[in-house]
Image 1 (cartoon, rainbow, N blue to C red):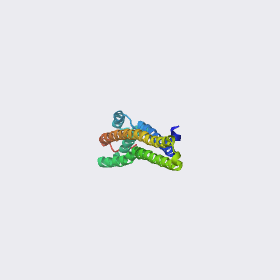
Image 2 (image 1 turned 90 degrees about the vertical axis):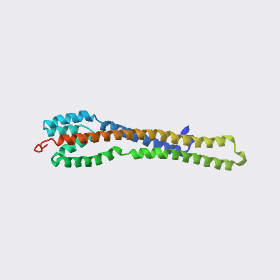
Image 3 (image 1 turned 45 degrees about the vertical axis):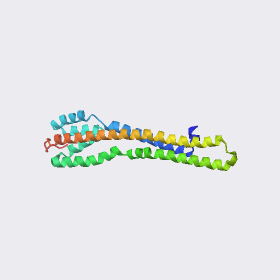
Image 4 (image 1 turned 90 degrees about the horizontal axis):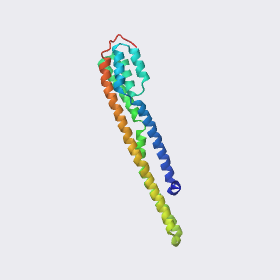
Length: 205
C-alpha cells in the first residue's frame, strides 16, 4: 500500500534501506568477533612468552580472531628487530588494521545523508505529478486527485527520514565499537612491546 502510493522513489528507498541493514549486520558481527578480552589474552601470551615458548605464543595469536591478536603476533615475529623495530612493525600493522575496521562505514554514513534527500526528491516529484494531473483535469480536478498527490509526497518524505534516522544511529554505534577496538589495540601494542623486548633473541619460532 505505502510502496504503491509512494511512487518510484519508495522502491529506491527500500533498496537503500536493505543495503544499510546488510552493512550494519555484517559490521556488527565483524566487530563482535574482533573485540576480544585483550587483558586475558595478553596475560596468556605473557605467561607463554616468559617460558620462552615462542611457537606456542604464535599459535595462540593465530587461534584468536581480531586485530589485537594480529598485532601481538606481528610484535612477536619482529622481536629480533629491537624495541624500535618492534614499535615500527606495530605502527605499520596498525595502519593496515584500522582501515579494515572502518571498511563500509562510509557507505552507511552516505545512506544516512542521502535518504532524506531521496525523500525530498520523492516529495517534489509527487507535487510535480499532482500539478500535472490537476492541469490535465482542468476544471474537473477534484479533492481525491489533490489528496493522492499530497499522499505520495508525504509518504516519500516520511520514508526518507525513517531510513536516515536508524542509519545515523547505527553509524554512530559502529563508530563507537571501532573506537573501542582501536583503544584495545593501542593498549595491547604498548604491553606487547614491553613483553617481547624481554624475550631472549636466540629463541626462534
